[in-house]
Length: 330
Image (cartoon, rainbow, N blue to C red; front, side):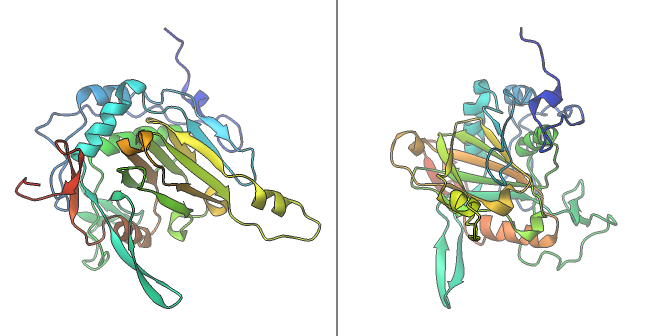
């Protein structure tokens, strides 16, 4: 049996010095299928993790995080894998079959013209920004006073807490990233045609140096990153080198996790490009944990990951996402 490593050996923070962190969280064992996670905003209850997945997940990570910081403004920690190979497939299939998703549509204005955007993937979101918190009964309280929030604090959305199956992963992730998170976004890429274009998670509501932990489950997909354009300066070759550099490509496999931290979001873009055939058509789930500081973050995440569309769920017989019907028929 290999010798167990101390927690601090799994990662080096930006300073490259070992960090003092808390011991791993004590994950409460699942209480069975008769006690699923539920909330008035859930279209249906979400089962707890099967005991064998829960137990193995508590032993994460399965590999040390490798620092990638050899390019300007880049600060990544890459776990290959974080989730053990013995459970990554079952965890993927469990989450795909038990979570509810949305195919969000929204409108944006470009050059004075209004354009409808159809999100090219399935999405869902859970969480609440730092100004509020969930009471044990699921109601929303002010974080500072523990009093109920005003009825109009979140006029455009109905925040909901993380179900147990995602919250257990959040607790473990916080230990090994030395960060805390209050939001969980889940994307399901059904085929290689589902994608996300180059973007950065640099919204002001995340703070100046956000830490975002991104998990991959299911099909292997390329994760591309490139530096944001740098304005040229006379006599300084740095801008040309950065602007002409090839994108960084990480072939994310099932169970892998990439932590993006420090100045990464302020200076880098990332994407999941379209791919044809092969493994990409088997489906992929991406889970990201992040921390929204103000209520604008809550409104943003629910607008672009829930919206006003219908609920979609996995149909195991047809092997595809189908519109969910309250009576159980799809």
